[in-house]
Length: 361
Image (cartoon, rainbow, N blue to C red; front, side):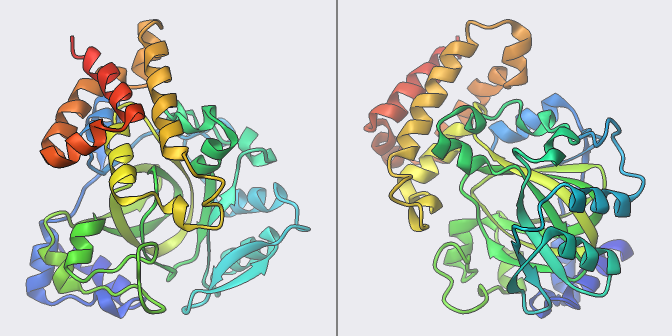
């Protein structure tokens, strides 16, 4: 393991003792690091179609027309001006991660002061003044969710992420695939396939963690075939499959933006996971409102792909439609026959599958 990698793990273990690794574990971890790649359409959609995380550098998400944030503090102050202080937000605070409701201006004041640990991951951007300042097309041009019903749009959640050095986000998973773009700072991410992790004793706060913190063991993480880790830094964008549980530690004061998406190149994996294991949205307070949402997404994706086949090549390329056959091949390799048969017995999924198969020719 390089000195830089060792320093990352030593630093993170100072905030979360479960990350303290022996020399032999550090050597195993060195083989599991995901390194950033230069952004390209090929790199993005290939990873998406194969169900793999990808960290891309040089993927421009413009703020006020510029691709690089030269002054993070000025960005933080712009964020504070863009939100109404009469509506406090839920913020994770301190080493304990205690939840408190505070105004956005107070969140920014604590972040700027560098003396407090604060974090928010769900500061909604859609419909705010800030949305006009940040060009998010790179994160959402291929996303079905913002184009659907109110319930579908609610799942997209284009949000700001603001966190202080030392903040730990416990092991959790998300329903759809997600994107995270970093404007400034650095975060260490650990990720693994949710159900492989559960079998090894790694818990997920969304899926049955029994204590205040999700159980995590670095030795078990090192043994997982799916385990990967990476550091997201300024001007880098992470695209993360929804099948991965992740634990995140802020190493340097961080501001980023992220969203959830359903795209042609990865929709089969997402829909299959929801049909087989159940979506997380069926476990929350809006479960009744979201009943039938998986079928709705499957039907909507089928209609979108049918529409795309009639569009100019530029539009089809923006949605990554040319990677759909690769996605179909990945799905056939990844899901056992009995699961595939069960999924094909569902009319919305079967209809989408026939449309996807028609693209192979």
